Amino acid sequence: MTIEGVWEFTPVLRPDDRGVFLEAFKGSVFEDAVGHPLNLKQMNISVSRIDTVRGIHFADVPPGQAKYVQCFSGRILDVIVDIRVGSPTFGTWDAVELDDVDRRGLYIAEGLGHAFCALTEQVTIGYLCSEPYAPTREHGLHPLDPDLKLPWPASDVVLSPKDAAAPTLAEALEQGLLPDYETCRAFITAAESRLRG
Image (cartoon, one colour):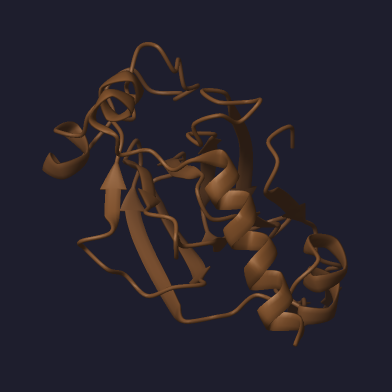
């Protein structure tokens, strides 16, 4: 991944004649890669039909909301957008397919925008979240913002009314909604110190 604050995890799959077993999330592996533990506050499950796009979602920092995303059934295109004002990669995105075959996980740090598109008839994804949902701190950007040029595979995607009414990146910047890069870095550094004791 090219955006600071994003890590991809590939679990070891142990198949046998009964099916497959894997460690979908392991604290020690996560901490070795990211540098701090995941402070789990909430788990969300999302079920979507093909061509549904959810996002681009983000939360105010502090406290933000970091996410560890996995696709439990089906296949999704997961997109992370750097919306941190002042970041060297501001306005760029990374995309990765997550599915129920490789069963990779994706960690997205506080301050980044997150969206996904369902690529199969039905998908179920789960996210481990560092903070609970808080509507007054949650925001969105329009996933079809022409300036972002996100790589959605379908030309006619399904959006919620809230996502369809969200501002573009430029509008959100003008409105002062976007997180600040240095504030995000300072918050994560302070959180790492607290979590490590």
